[in-house]
Length: 254
Image 1 (cartoon, one colour):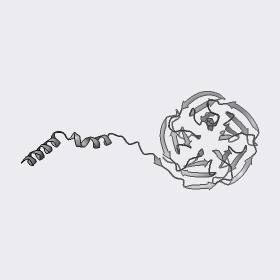
Image 2 (image 1 turned 90 degrees about the horizontal axis):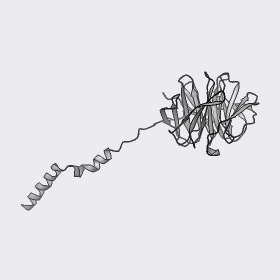
Image 3 (image 1 turned 90 degrees about the vertical axis):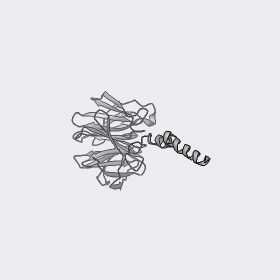
Image 4 (image 1 turned 120 degrees about the vertical axis):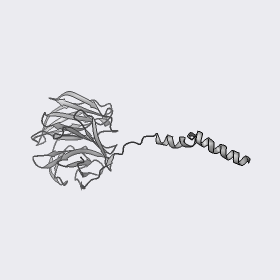
């Protein structure tokens, strides 16, 4: 009899106080899982004959790619399959990014340790330089450069401390935006057709797509670190890797 009474009391307590047996489950459901970032993978890769490639841009006149190295002072022209076509002897130092003027007749690079934006002609002769100094650490300074070919505005990125995009018009800073979407930023490409920025992060292993005002639109995970340069050719993304010296080709995601 006593056993039956205890059993009925136990069942009644479950009906009245179900929270005792459900709190653990409820707590787990209250944790919101972060949105999964889509992973994308290379469709091709090519070994470059370039030491520590650190920046890349498309040359629309020659249908080729221009690449800089932070290990050598020269500028390289390579095919879309990674074959070296030409070497421009230049006097750059620790070059970390590259872009081309609208007519592809002027080369702009960033020199990290000097914190300079420097321009060269196609013969490698230095034309001009200006300072872009926002870094608090010499090893976390300028990393990439791109150009809006309609306005001729240049955009430069600082890797970290602070992570930032700087916009220049006629060599004068007109705009800056702090970037909080990755632990570092390694290069930048402005896509004229969409009026958007594409960034790559070495440490976070990400490609980021930003609006023209620097707001995050989309991001994708890539399967390697040391992605140091990014450019777009049609529906393909080209990335150079500073560590393994390879050129990686991705299908551009929508």
